[in-house]
Image (cartoon, rainbow over all chains, first blue to last red; front, side, top):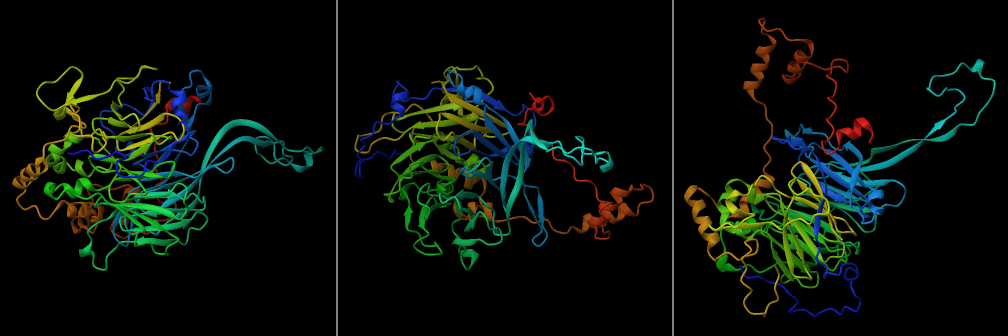
Length: 467
Length: 122
């Protein structure tokens, strides 16, 4: 496949600010990844409920949430002592865990509703409590995670054990006080947003206005106010009058990080539509459509399947977005709709295995992609617990593995190599030996530092850069 | 890896993650697939739609119903109260009361949470 990319056809932007990362890393910005921690157990047979289905850092990176197929959420918190150490370590400990969703049964349609957590999104912190949105296929919930480290003591009518005292024995009055207690972290559901989606919810995204959020299913996107659970505005509806005319579905959606009226949604046909809510109430017609022209000579039965976009993410600065399709990650400039500005091949060698991948359903796997905090790097997962890192400026890429074989602290991870032909070099693995059940679908990058969280089936790996 | 257009032919890649596959590789994979499944209909697009939108429902099964009834009325294998109630519920005969309902099984904690932490408060 011919590579496309570069900045050849658009105006080069003026950069008159020296990027900060070049001050910190003297080696030209290359990141050397080291193992930090792994959470979860080693098991011969993985329990389905333990499979991690989403990973998300909060807006300052001090909290890391995971959701699993069993409907549970586990929140990890940055170890502040490790953070303050020299050299600083990216370590996370369990902070809170709760059952977010339960399996349900839709009696009207005789359908089971899975409790699997599809997405978690954090709200920006405005007070001492943390808030996150978690969703399964049908229902979104707003959770409050609060700390309690003081308890009231010294009541008059109750003794310290809580047992009522005989009023006749009370001769003095005392003022109850708050005294310190062991830290308790409690999660409580504050809002339940239900009954707004006929199809399966694939995305939620919090708006930069901090008041609203969107939820997207295969055919519709709804806008919610965080305070109101019994109403939702439908802003996109691609359901045709006759379902036989349906040709594409919505695969992902996200609000622009800075423009509160703009959002994008990707489709199974490989297009991305940018919509502006100021234009009209129902955003069925897009403001912009991003689509790469197809090479008609290269069409095959698989073309449409591998073009389907599984994830779309805006860059932190809001000028670009990345999309993940089956074999590549593409960087789009919001000002250029005709084609992506950069294309990165994730695992091109799979193109010659599409027949088998279709038969075992792997061709339908939905991989996510992530930006680094400075928008310079991109990360996405692959098979055999491999994940791919792309350095956009240094024009480097790397393949690493999430494995318990490389757990030595402060040891840079060795790049992994795959070979297709007969001659296999040492440390290389043959394409036919790759484990397609070990998929890295969900990854997250700390919003400010070079710390990444990788979900490998039922285990969570945390890696950090050596420097 | 991204390259600038106009810089001539891309450098020879020996990294299979990036190495471009020869043209026609997809078509030969398609031929393999069609040989295996001669009744394969349409393009890949419909495969995606089918996968996502078709939801298989859980419907009434007369076999299950009759088996459950038989279990209830089997004098050779008497059932205890909670089992009886469950089966009666499944065939629509029982009206459960709060006292009779089996208690909700508490969910097992996620294995990401270190057991030592829950028990030992490390």
